[in-house]
Amino acid sequence: MSQVPDSSLLIEKDGRLQFEVYRKPTHTDQYLAFDSHHPLEHKLAVIKTLFHRADNIITSDTAKTDEHRHLRGALGKCGYQRWTFNKALKPSDQSKKTAKCTPLTNRNKANITIPYVQGVSEKLRRIFQNFNIATNFKPQSTLRQRLVHPKDRPRKGSKADVIYRLKCEEPNCNNTYIGETSRSLNESVIPNRYREIRAKVKEVIMEMFFDEEFLEKYLSHKLMEVANNVDMKAKVGEIVHSKTVDRLIDEKLSSLGTTPEGQLILKMGVDPKSLKPMIKPFLQGFGEDLAPMIKETLSDPMQVIDVSKLRKEMEKYMNSRMETLTEQRVTSLLEAVIRPHLGWIIVWGCVFGGLIGIITQAVGLAPSY
Image (cartoon, rainbow, N blue to C red; front, side, top):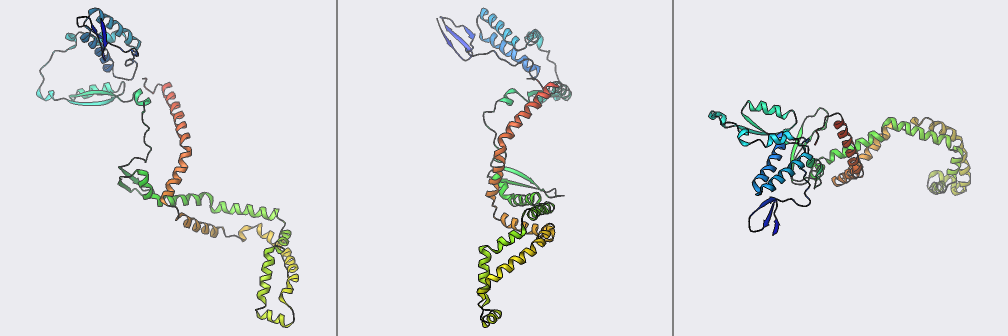
């Protein structure tokens, strides 16, 4: 006698036909748990389906009894109690109600399917029934939906062939723009709004780093450091004896010979270049006399620097630099800002999501599965 397993049948060849329910060696007897968040009718349907298969496929009474015993044990482990078997396996003549003649208007019932929420959906069904509406339940949230994600969801903005809406971000502006693009949303929206993004970048930089009050405090602090930590007289001497000043003196003395004053000096028999040894000591002495005045001026930098004018000059420079910021560069900058933090966003999102789930489960707000 040989056996051939089918998808749900066990066929034995012994000269006569005999059928049994076949289960793979890896079968776990895991069925819809009775304490899961599903309608009672779905759970009773599990019992009906399994017992209906056993009654209609198995040909041997002994095998049928064994299958019934096996199903009761397996479903019992899934939380099904004795009353559920009694209710689901009630003889058909008791479960079927006597057919009644109903008016033609009542025969055409409407049918709707609503998400199942325990304690709420049943009440809605009773209300709809009064209006001749048949109601079916559909589990809204399952373990498969929560845990099984064979594909990564596309990143927001990466979808192509989309219709999008942009809201006006100006104060007191309620306008919206609706557009359609065959490109991805990022490739379409950023070019459309890159001027706005570019202006926003400049605005943030100017407000955060070049605020007038901040600039005034920063420059005051730095100039005070210079005034207190730098020996002005020594600095003047260093400048006077530098190669740069030496070259400037030579250039000025060379050009002096072409001026009327220089011609007068030449008539007196004096070469203007011979005045250089006298000029340097004069410059150093003059600079040392000015050093205390320079230090005093630096102690009040607002006498030296117009912060408002300086900020305007910086803003002009920012505008000229922003003109070189293309839409491709804006896209690259946004990605460069987001990518390094994307991993942490996902990690902390999972952490906080888990904490919220634990808290809601603890206070009894979350359904059990």
